[in-house]
Length: 179
Image (cartoon, rainbow, N blue to C red):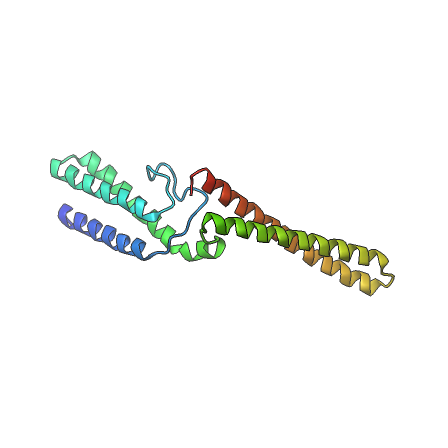
């Protein structure tokens, strides 16, 4: 395969990737998506990473025209690595969607925070009630049943607190201008 065909194949891959990214849902992430060696930017939007790939492709074309083999090899390798990383990210978007809360407006986030704080308060009350009932029980079966209920409530409380921390981090990030 000659240089022109390889360049066209790479262009076609970039175009397909751009189309896939355009159709992908926008999911905000708390951590950088890619290694800093791979992309020059830190952004939540895949379209910005796609723009960097297209910029590199344009630069690759210029280097091919100038006949600079080392730069061509470097850029081609970088573009292929970037495309691979973006394709991998796109393939895991469905998983991220399940594990990521939807980006909400500031007011919605505060409302969600208040709601989760209320859940936490109610779960703590339920735990106290069950604990007091546990100490009053004399039969072993009733104690075991209450202990299972306590364990379930403690698990719910733990998950509620984790959700609270995530919401608080989202609010913090939004207020500091990162999201």
